[in-house]
Image 1 (spheres, helix red, strand yellow):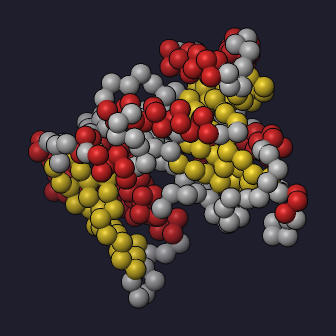
Image 2 (cartoon, rainbow, N blue to C red; image 1 turned 45 degrees about the vertical axis):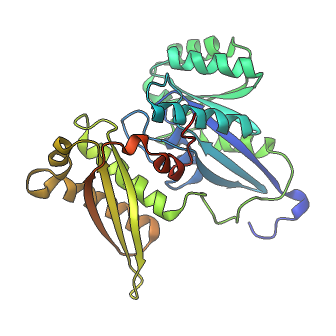
Length: 303
């Protein structure tokens, strides 16, 4: 792609919004072509804004993967929802991802209302369409387009990649003319230390299922480059109560070993080198209320 004339370059931001678990992160990862945002069957796994960078011909598309928009209850919830709307406000385009299986629920309706209040047009992406009957899908598409804010409708399966190429092409055509904001080989603005912590958090969610919903955070404490080209990464898994420690560690350390092995395997694939990963579990009752924790995630503590 090197050699594109500056006069031909295009670049712009596309905010990817939607209700929790609509498949936003899977969509962003699929468009980028590699993992830049964590994915889990649990809702609300994306906690902060992540940029995914897509090159499509002369266009650089900067996807803003935002936390799921839902009715907030805790301080962390409020900060996540505020981050999602901030991402949408600053973008040239908004892409609303709707889980075609769930259809138009209260969270989707709240997003539609907010977009209309802001006078924003959007591109509608119905996701997980391979699991929905065609007649039901067409009815949902007609129902949502009747809102009058959608310029286009795409039906995709973010997991399999079906429909993503056409979506990327429309983004590429509509971002404004202008210089690229990132090097063409960059896929995200997420620092490696933060991405590594997010990968471990994803693996912890998958391992712990419903035993420890949302009650943990992961922080990369140290990152040491070794002479042999490998990296030593020390991470802390923060939990809120002593009683949760045994759940995370597991019998004979089996649970935390499984989390570490899965995280290490993915980190080695992403970094393309050997990784020595060391996980430590610490109880910090107020981690979800610490101003510094919000700052580290790029969230507004006072939202």
